[in-house]
Image 1 (spheres, rainbow, N blue to C red):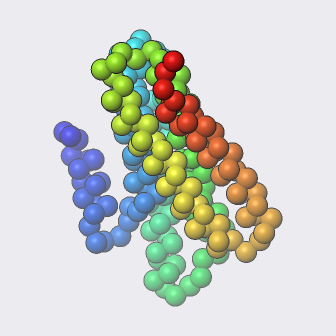
Image 2: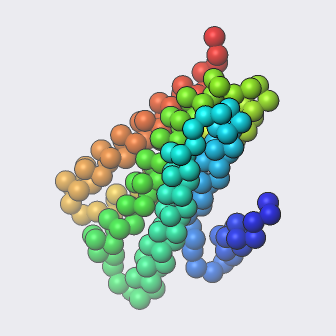
Length: 180
């Protein structure tokens, strides 16, 4: 990896200091997976515009999630309790991540038949990175769901998660099917 910014970011993640955390790592993994999909799409002469937009969104989600986590840690360190608005704020970037990962998995499913055999391994790496982003984001949202006091809000949020997770899991199952 030649990008020192990526190396520094992974160092920040491993360091014992303040965030980034799991949500940021999931979003960065999705961005890397989208980079692989863009590379494969170019090799297959497929369009890359949507993939590039999602990659940029995933990077923005990583930054947003890091900022949210910093705020949450400030609240906890001061002995305060998270407000409902802060919990909703923590969830929003991760909801976007679920949508990005689901859409990217759907795009990977469409791209797969266009790829030469030697490109399938790279596709597998992207698929599993996206699956980790999808499932990791959903797990973090589940934690935040438990902090919401209003049942109606929890139910509405759970429906959004279920839709995105369902789309992503469906695409993942389709990707795992053996070709005829």
